[in-house]
Length: 463
Ligand code: LLP
Image (tube, rainbow, N blue to C red; front, side):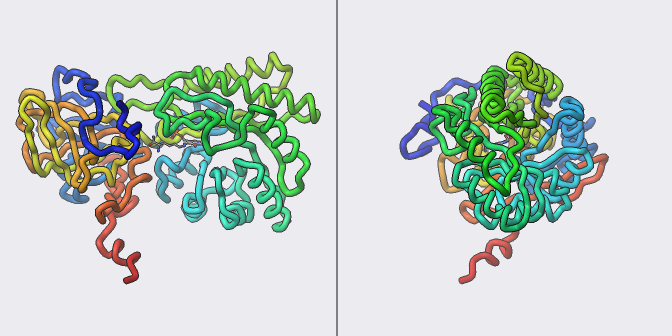
């Protein structure tokens, strides 16, 4: 039974079926390059380093728990995506995965665009000087204020999610004397092969306008009639953490069918198509993600082929990877506090963070790997469950993984691939203080999002 299928949500740590973890690796000291960021290694003392910095020193300087983000890796991934898609396509980094002002600077410098999905993300982007024309605004219920802010800033596109919103955006743009470029987000009836909560293109969900029953065609009809907006394309996002390109293929085909129908009905060829984000990353060595150039090649081929057979000019393609850029670039560093062996079952390893810095395990049954990073160990592998310090038995960071049997309080362990949707979904549950994000590069480390303090918490509590 899936934990998330439990009607009351996760109650006990053991509602999950047992035995679905992989066997221990031959050497627990090995750092699989699939899950660790590119500059991670071990020094001759056995201490793990990132960008040349030993984690023991980082822990002393910045404390634990903390996220360490490998800036060179982040930039390299941005470049790989931009180069893979080339100058005839656009890559929008999905800021929901992780956004900060430093990230915006990196995106600007590496030539990427930015997808924001809230007023807060828009404010961060604008504050850090992202050129507005390189920003896209998403959201299924954008407030009037958010729309006004986006239109007056001059964002490059607003992705319309509903009929009501279309009218709202058109009205606001007209009253501001603007014509706002928009795309319409359609749901293409594809359910990506991933966790139910993060698959978004099947019909029974809140996002977008269904292609089914002529809904999307009707949306296009209305959009083309409205003053204040200029319909430039169709958008589709089919889910998250997807490895199988088949879902994108069906989605692209259906979107192109709509473009052909629009041309036939209105004599208009919409110039843009956005296929969303959702490309998977390796959380454990078993995961096998595709490289950006393979993804670009296959998406471009699908769209080109479908357009050719429909007699359409190939539209400008855009994509919105979030996780695939930032996910692999960071790890979370924790200190081990207590260790509770359960004979014949597993050992519970409690760390100084938990579900407040990584909710994904509790929420989606996400899998992670973990390693002892403050030293090398040749002790036997020990089946472990890494848990946090929250008052909740579902507070699990890594459900099943092997750590060395000589693990002791005070050791540092790290969970890789926590760059996406960990800090951005972090909470103050139990009045936990959200950890800092420290960017590391070429032997230097700097805080880009500082650790929360008790003063931060109390400042919001006005008594
Ligand atoms: N574009 C749109 C319209 C989206 O809704 C999303 C993600 C993305 C792009 C970026 O998807 P990515 O490439 O990062 O997978 N909190 C969940 C993921 C929710 C994703 C929501 N939308 C998780 O932790 O897995």
